[in-house]
Image (tube, rainbow, N blue to C red; front, side, top):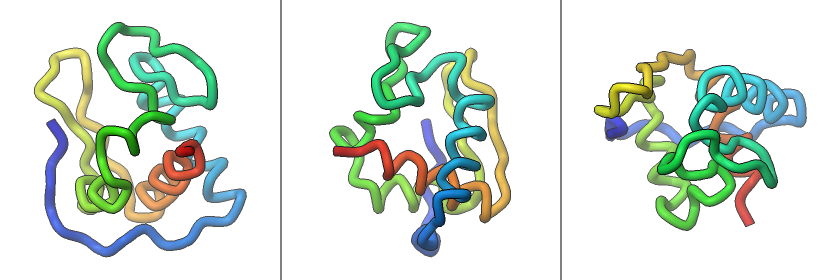
Length: 99
């Protein structure tokens, strides 16, 4: 479950911001999710990040992450709290993976 609160859209990110987002998701999300362009999710069930726009509009994803909290009711998914800049980088990276 993601916390859904309104917020401002992610600011445009440079290549460095996208790279920071990639590093953040690799460390914090990559144990369960496929976070790259072609990898498989290590666990059955978690969606690959490159397919998130198939399930969620990207602007809804920005809204869901707007307060910097990413968490789920699933016991294997820890709560992750990020700064606004980190969230912008994560969203920019995820957006860069979408078709």
